[in-house]
Length: 322
Image (tube, rainbow, N blue to C red; front, side, top):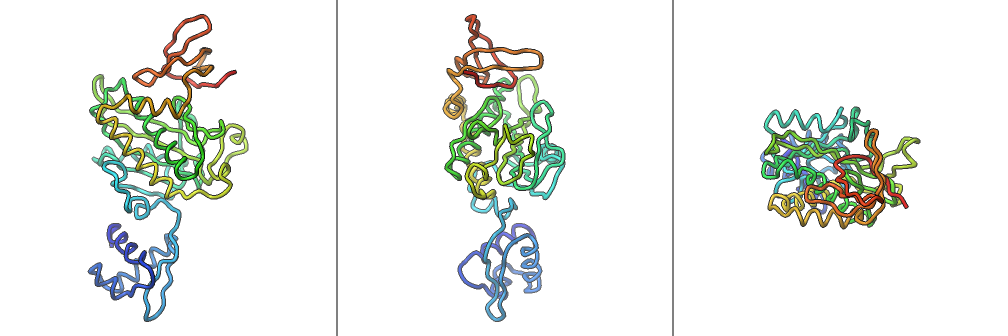
């Protein structure tokens, strides 16, 4: 029985009360033995299903695991999340996404895993990815977006994460340039956008997103990082959060494709609250201090130093100063 058939089986089981094996077999056009086998598979996947003789099967609870059957069901997006690959563990979702691109993966394909063994962030930094978090990548073919505006892809991702966290948890995240999402000034999410581009065209983009949801943190990370569970005080539903992120990413990416970069940039500025703030930018051996005057059309910071000089910040790690 294919994944699509398994989704139909779950739809039948999702209705109130018991459903007979005979009725399920009839609806799906398979044998009762095939139904029984799939029921057992679902149980192994974490679905709690009760079976009673002469009554049939009853779905009592669903696992909070980002299976395609859970995430893609009633997602109702135009591009993002039409296809989803779930793994218990992967070296890196970005690396697997590259393999899928080489095989002709559709735009909007999502790769998600419970844990990464070789997750990475900006500048090849290690990204700790234990069970309980959300570690996923989204494949895009933004051929209409000029390479000099590629920063807008990271922007739509950080906006989607911010909006989804707020909607699901009630927390008020803040975006930190260029690729982080913070809660109470601690990092809860990192975004890594990787491009394959020419001078005038982006061939493909992979947006890797890592969110500390219900996972544990290493001791040395607790000072600067947090998890949604720590901030809320209870477990956060990962499937619901991922579905909400994908919906918001779909909506914001659609704005980009319509050429509405200004709409995206204004929304990003609203969530980052960085304009007018004093910051220190560190990049390799360079340290620049100043006040953020604006975020330009390409997503870079325009910084005014105390000497009155305006500097365009293309990369670096920023710290807010007083």
